[in-house]
Length: 133
Image (tube, rainbow, N blue to C red; front, side, top):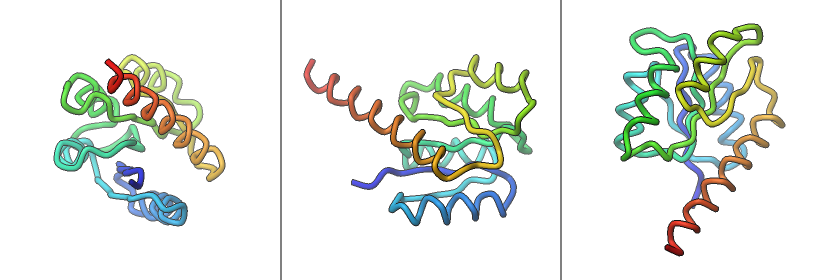
C-alpha cells in the first residue's frame, strides 16, 4: 500500500514542486490550499503524512495541526510543518500544537524523503504494537 501524503500550501508552485518530487518516489499525493480544505480532506481520506505550510488564509497551519492532533479519529496522522528559516516563534507554536516534525524552505528532496521514511517507520511500528495488544 502506497503512503498517502497531503500537501497543504496556498502557493500553487510549492504544491506543484512537492507533488512532482513525491510522485516520482511513488507516493499517493493529494493537495489542499489552506487549513480548512486540509481538515476536510484529512477527514475524508486520512493520509499517512501531511506537509503543512504555516502561513495560509482561512486557517493557518498551526491551527490546522492543533485540530488534527485533538481529533481522536485523525490524531495519528503525521504532520510535518514546512516553514522558512528564522520563524522561531512559529516553530515553537507548531511543536506546541503537536506537529511531528518540521522542514525549512526551500525543501531539499533528500531531507524530505528522510523525514517521510522516518515517520512512516514510526507509524508502522505503532500500528504493529497496537495489533499485538
